[in-house]
Length: 451
Image (cartoon, rainbow, N blue to C red; front, side, top):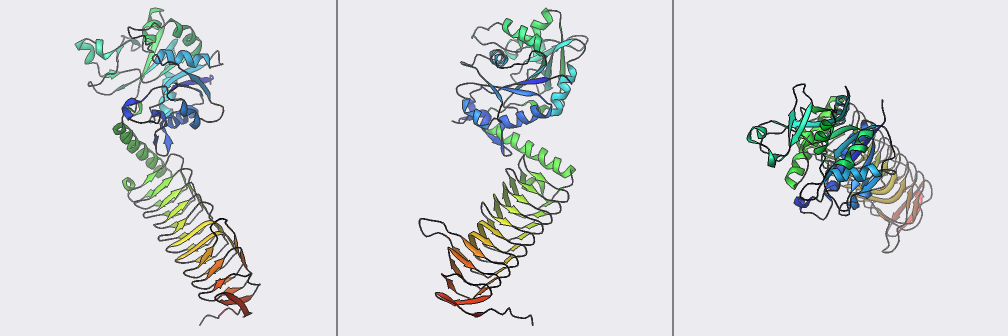
C-alpha cells in the first residue's frame, strides 16, 4: 500500500459556536471533534498534518506527540490551508487525504473508499454526498463517464445546477506530487480567498481525470458549526459506539438511556443497565454488570464485577468485585478480587485486599487494607489533620468494629480487632482487641464462632 498523508484543516474560527474554545476542541463522546478525525486518519495509516490558525492554536494541546503542525496565518481559504500544510509535509510521493477537523463522523471506511477511487489515472478524488437541495454546498457536475467535471458553488449555480442532488467538497484524496504542483496555481477569488474546489477545474484543464466517491452515509460529511449540530453529532456518535459494542457481545438494557465514550473498552457479555455513563479511558471485563444508574470514569473493572448505582473515578476493580448501591470510589482506589463495598461506602487513594468486606456507611482514605478484613458500618479513617494526609494500615483478617475511628497514622495488626465505637489513636498489635475512647488493647482477640 502506498504511503499516505492527511492534511487536516482545523483553522476555522467557529464563530457560530459562540465559544472561546476553538471549534475543533469541543468534545463529543469524550473526545474532541479533531480527535475523532485524527482517529479515522490513523486507521487508514495516514500521517496527519494538522493546519491551525492563531485562533485555533490551542488545539495543539490535544494532538498526539509528534503530530506535524502547520499554521495558516492569516486564514485565506481551504486552498491556502493546504498550501501551509504542504510546506510542513516531508513526503514527496504519497496519497494525500484532505479532510476537515470538524467532521467527527467521518469514518475510516469512507476514507478507504475515497482512496480506492483514486485509480485509472485520476490525480484527484472528491468526496460527495446527497445532503438535500437546501444547502450552501457546491454541486458536483459529472461527465458522461461518471468522472467529476466541476464543482459549482451554490451562490452562482444555475436553477438546473441547484437541482443536482449530489454536493461536494467534503474531502479529497489526491496524488501528492500532483497536489504540490497544483495548489500554487490556485487563484484567489474576489475576497482574496483560495478554495480547493477549484482543483477540479484545474485538473480537467490539464486533461487529468478527477474521480468522485459518493458516501451513502450523508451524516459523515456534516461539519459542526453550531451547538445544535454538535448535539446532533453526539447523538449519532454515541449510537454508533453502542452498536459497535453490541455487535461485539455487549448487552444494553436500554440503549438510549446510557452513553459510552469513544475510548471505552467493553468485554464480551458485559451488561450495561439503563442510565449508566461510561466515560474516558474506562475498561470493563467480560461478564460484568454496570448499573443501573452508575458512572464509571477513567477506571478499570475486571471480570464478573457488579457496579450498581455507584460512582467509580480513576479506580481499579479486580475480578469478582461488587459495589453498591450508592458506593463511591474516588481516584486511587484499588479493590482486589472478591471485595464487597456496600451502600454509602467511600474509598479514596486506598487498596482493599482480597475478600475484604466494607458493607455500608464507611469511609476509607489513604489506607492499605489487608485480605479478608471486615470493616464495620460507620468506620472512618481520619486521614487529614487540616494540613497533612496520613496513612492507615490494616492487616490481614482484622475486624474493625462499627463506628470505629482510626486516627492516622495508625496501624491495626493482622488478626486484630477494634470494638464498636472505638477511637483508635495508637497502633493495635497483631491479634489484639482494642476498645474505648481513646482505645487501648485489652486482650487477645478471639474471633466469634458462627452459631
